[in-house]
Length: 180
Image (cartoon, rainbow, N blue to C red; front, side):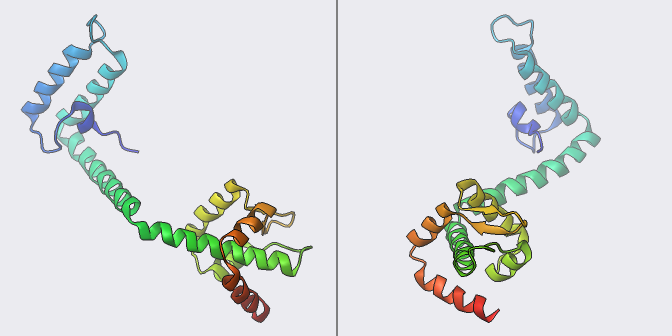
């Protein structure tokens, strides 16, 4: 996480050194701990730290690289959050994983789990994306790890899978598992 020194000083990343000094002096006087009306030691420390980085051309250049990367990350995050297709894909992946685990449990109640690698292959979801879904479904109580370390559906997960009108998906997956 990158501390946004521009945000702390309430200035643009394009601000020149004179603007940085002027704004720093204003905020330093306002938030200095000796100021009885508006003093704020924590805010004052943030302002001093931001000023010390942004007033030094070398430190500012190094900081600007990190700040730009962080800004790009925030923009990508915001774009993904507004993309409703991402949510739709998540629902499909979770339904598929629950369906796979439902079929496996129904086929062999004594050995109901599927290993991580096999679940990745069967779901068509790469491990790095599947981790989010596994975390979510585990937190919801829909899945869990069994004694041998594999992942299995829970009673709550079965209720969820059945409630999602996954009948056709479950039948297709049963066929795939029998053929696998």
